[in-house]
Length: 459
View 1 (cartoon, helix red, strand yellow):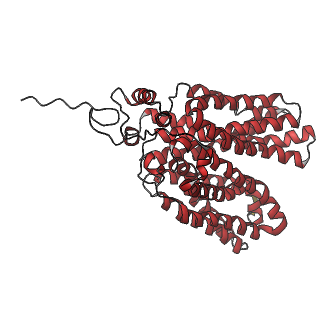
View 2 (tube, rainbow, N blue to C red):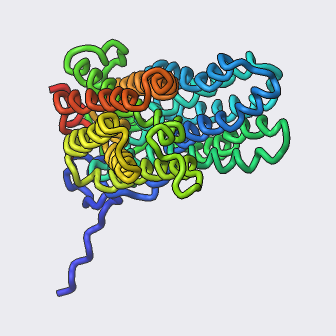
View 3 (cartoon, rainbow, N blue to C red):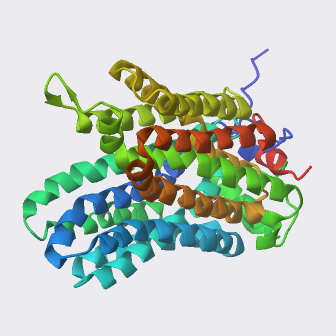
């Protein structure tokens, strides 16, 4: 007897007619997922890029326009304010009108706002454009992350979403490399520096064209036929909608603050803000903090800038390690234990500020490596613990609250250093971090191994 022909399989690995708990959740990672992850990463990359270049451009702008310290601070903070507004407003809009429309239009808006900075003639115009640029960047966070989360398989979801945080660091590093090269163009180099994010934004707008709508979002709006067409386009002609939540539901902003979702929103807001505040402080004031902690010279060689680079690399390494293990470790384990260790490191620096250079380096290194877990979960948790109809809305609320932490880290830290010294400053940021660890222990849900619908279910 001839051996039977091997059974045909779908791209998901399932056989035709075989019941599936959820094709989206159980399929292996494909080229489609990899492309979508890369294109969604553009938002955080542009965030790190755009925030990084303004620091290099401001000294030239200040000299050319004779800007006061107040104006310089306003221009530096403008994009952060815009990100707050963009996340809060356009997360909700994305849940109303869909991921696909916003995904394509928003990245083009980033390119336009960045390019327009080249033509400004005064600080007022630049301030407006920096705010608008921040709005477009802030909008892309909930748009792209919700689209990625709704296509990502459950086992790979934390790794694919966690990669977004790595791209912020990559964008920030790229900004310094590009800005340093462009500074050689002369007194108007700042115009080319500020316009430089338009280049990757334009490329990304082209690459994102043709990305399909989220089937989960289509089902949440009762558009079953369209959802099935998308599934078959992405996963093959035998794809079905089995196992995907298909209950149509209205998008209501207030739902983020009602019932079980109020508890989850409180958790996201507090843990995100408390984890991001010390990170922004270190990114923004690493040389000042290192100098205050006694790491200014070693053997007569200036090391502040080297120390800043080292901190940045360790923060990046922490997110890389956390991303690699995220699919294998329970969410609460990846969040609470590293958060506690990172907080203890900061508090130790405040309690023993006169310790040896070696001890300072070790404590800062421990903090930078361990905060990687909470950092990637800033993106993972908000996408997992809310249903499709308010997923982008909730993520936008998280983005908005996290910008409060960014402002604290950027502008309050230098005031603390000048007013109360480095010991008290480290105790303050350590205490903020510790609050996040405690709230995480009390409120963080466990979503490891769950489908997206299971993780978002409201009890």
